[in-house]
Length: 267
Ligand SMILES: NC(=O)C1=CN([C@@H]2O[C@H](COP(=O)(O)OP(=O)(O)OC[C@H]3O[C@@H](n4cnc5c(N)ncnc54)[C@H](OP(=O)(O)O)[C@@H]3O)[C@@H](O)[C@H]2O)C=CC1
Ligand SMILES: O=C(O)[C@@H]1CCC=N1
Image (cartoon, rainbow, N blue to C red):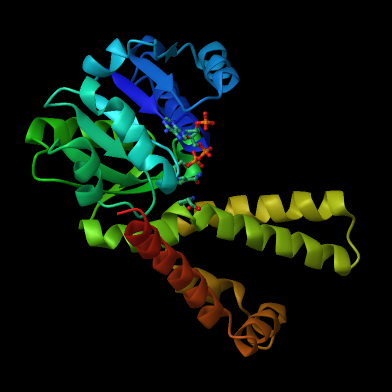
């Protein structure tokens, strides 16, 4: 299997790292290209052993999958520059937020398109990825896609329209978790801990809780920590009085709305 990554930023790197780490892909079967940043391509070549797409772009003709990993605003130009080098059975795998299969086909022609929404935990094989594909993607290619995506984490097949929600909760999700971790460190420092101790304690708390989340119901886990009239109950009451769940709902809704908006803006 050969893959060309069009767009070589943080998402492409996370996926490349995951594929190579899990030995799903050999580095020599992966090629990278971007708009102008040659130093970035050279870094990826030196770090992972991948190829840089040559001026003639022959790598594209040989590709089974072409990963689109640029910002939504750059899709039209990027696809325009590669479309004449693609064959009819190249599958385009887009991780671009918001931009629909229909829009990509408008630029690329009626090729098989898959849209996936991974997150940066792909780097350590722990992405939460949602995926949808067009009817042109054959059963064999669907199987290869699942192999590719499951090598970077868990895969959930959804309807294309549901990718906005997947993006809002799982694509952007790691950033919310990091933000919560930052807030907990700040709060711990305000309660008298050193920054180093606060950071160590919060890191370990997230690590343990993330493992526990795999084993039981979320609400049950919370109940087990919460003694009647104890410290956790006091903390959760403060979160409730400040409408924490409503705040999280507003956060996920804003991200999903932005995903829809990006889709409209770059159609
Ligand atoms: N970061 C994340 O957590 C996630 C991101 N995504 C999606 O992945 C996509 C990429 O995000 P991310 O990796 O963070 O972005 P980056 O800004 O890190 O990388 C964008 C890449 O696109 C390249 N590019 C821009 N224009 C073109 C072009 N015309 N032809 C070829 N390459 C081009 C840039 O090249 P150059 O530097 O030369 O301009 C750069 O390599 C986005 O659409 C985002 O929605 C999806 C899931 C998670
Ligand atoms: O912020 C973004 O637009 C991208 C999509 C999901 C994560 N990062």
